[in-house]
Image (cartoon, rainbow, N blue to C red; front, side):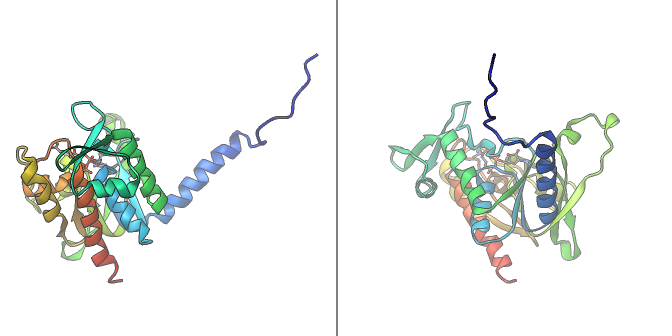
Amino acid sequence: MATETAPLFSKAGEKDVTRAIVGEFARQFEEYVESDVLIAGAGPSGLMCGKLLAERDYKVLIVERNNYLGGGFWIGGYLMNKVTVREPADKVLDELGVPHKKVSEGLHVADGPHACSKLIAAACDAGVKFANLTTVDDVVLREGGRVAGLVINWTPVRSMPREITCVDPIALESRVVVDATGHDASVCRTLADRGLLELPGCAPMWVERSEDAVVEHTGEIRPGLIVIGMAVSTVFGLPRMGPTFGAMLLSGQRGAQAALAQLDQG
Ligand code: 48H
């Protein structure tokens, strides 16, 4: 006769698991309805920016339309998962503890999954929270054209045919909004669609020009709205840089400095 052994796991059952998920999600969501900083997009620039702001104890929520975080940072280019950075951005890899190799003068290569997972972990460790599978639909616009929040909806709702979904979005408020949505510049596009901003799109590839220009142009473009990463190229018509990520990391840093200049004023 088989003897019953003592269970290895606790007695927590299905209802407990469900309550844990629903309760914690609702508690956190309610807390972040009003954040210090809302960042649209969890690519390398958004993660870097969020990490630095959360390290300064600001309440940061990153809204990401995909289920996974990291944007283009998992894959280097052409479906090959090696990411490159040009100096001096190798210092950021050092700070994140990402192993990398100098392959030619001023150029370093790292494993995409390693670099991306370390950056995500660093943002989480700093206290950044995420709303994934959530798409930015619009902005909250207040007096003087100040961007004061993001209008969001579940990505699955937005991907269903309109005939069978009629679900209004909801809004989150913040002191600062950051557009880190890459090529799409989704937040800026909501202004462009209304004729409030020009959106020329990025220019052809020229890596030696592009990375410096992206970092230089990173900053506040409308009251309350900071643009970082590849979205900067889209907004200012700057050349693209191809599959190299140094400017994304340094633009994230510069965007955080621009946000701090406002947040620290109180
Ligand atoms: C919620 C959204 C929405 C939306 C988009 O593309 P990313 O990796 O962006 P960056 O700027 O941090 O890095 C750009 C880099 O990956 C790249 O593409 C380079 C260097 N290209 C050079 C070249 O020459 O092509 O991440 C943006 C994130 C993604 O995860 C999107 O899913 C997300 O933003 N996103 N999230 N609501 N409306 N739109």
